[in-house]
Length: 149
Image 1 (cartoon, rainbow, N blue to C red):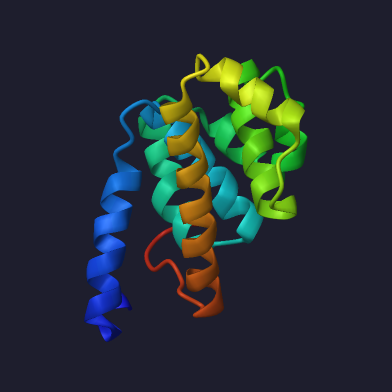
Image 2: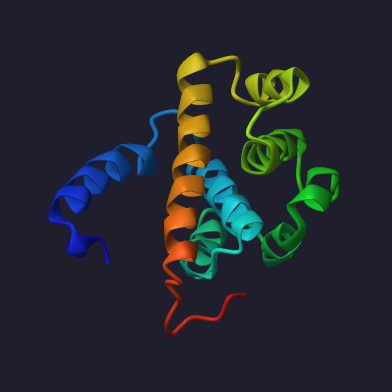
């Protein structure tokens, strides 16, 4: 799809390469955030693509299933620890409200050891996938050959 505009494809590939390989956000948290955003945006293509990645990074099928309702998952202490719930809160607020409550940022900072680079990387992951999901959903890009879990 991006190859309809080689200039956009080149720019996107450069940006996403940096976002996909954060230095300080764990692969599990990156996939948790990516999946949460995909479910919030009903982006089937990304759900099919990143759901298995979350499982490969240590997530459970029960956790993945719980992301169908991210707002409820935020309060699910049986499936998600405090750092996971902080990330899910950040995903929910950035996706639904755009603005993030100070309390949520405090919890995210705690989860990421108050490391500004890690916080920025996580926010960039969530923001990037929100933007990408909007492109995929608007253009009705469907996942082929995969079950949306």
